[in-house]
Image 1: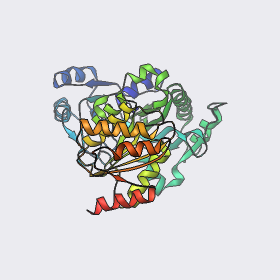
Image 2: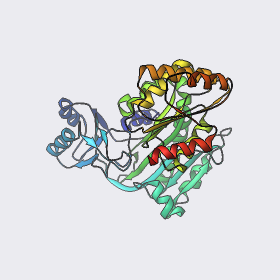
Image 3: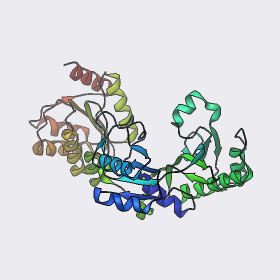
Image 4: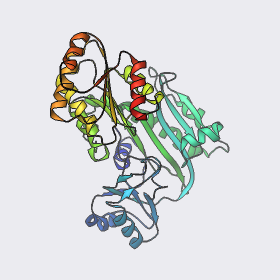
Length: 389
């Protein structure tokens, strides 16, 4: 679950991580009060959307006068912001953050992530702040410093010193102390909030010597939300695809993609393999949909309805290996969905496992028009024919 920048900064302040003073604005009527409450000029107007690269899309404006700040906020509210991460359709700006300007001397990058290759949290630090860290890693990997954290012992003071003393030139003693202290607090924040990402880019040193988190990007592990109930309340459904929001109500693992072949699968591994098969066939998956091992007939029905609501879908591949989820349950769910929503695209079905013959019989004896695949290879061939048609 992603947090907005203003939400992440509110949490940062609770953990002693300094941020600029800011005020959230949701409507034009709140702009003047926000400017009254924030020292300026300059003021910085920031679109609050779940997308990176806001500056490149015009979603961050540094303004030198009150009139300019108010104008930027008004124009940004309700606009469609297009960034390298949103795609050409962009996202709507429903709220903006009015923030005090900061007199920047130096910029750094700092983040806590989960490093899956070593199964440990990792602190990433770089003097190339304000830039896309992926680009820095590609062009100047020597500027990326890492410290892996053993969860049993937690963050150790020497790890902060290791990172800071990698800088050249070395900052002054007060800045070193401030940076290492902030690193320790960021680790505590990361662990206590069950984060998968806690990023500050840039982390700045002001000309007066203060260390300030100028930006904040925080992602909470969805699997931990059951014990992070206050954080779960921060989710903004407007920032999610409507089909994904609908799927969550039925406990379906659905992610909308940009392709043309809808897929319904049980099991994450099989879902990934199915998506690979679709791509190898020359098509692109329109979604990731894992109904899970314990899916009910209602979940199957709803899953297929959601796939059919995606106008980009040109064919559907159902790939089920029956274990806990029996093939006959899947077949009945498909028929129920067909009754509620007309299936207007080719349907390819591959069933194996528990009650497979019963499942095939249910589909065969229906008036549903579908193709049966014996295995993944044949399913790929059938997908290819639909793409070429």
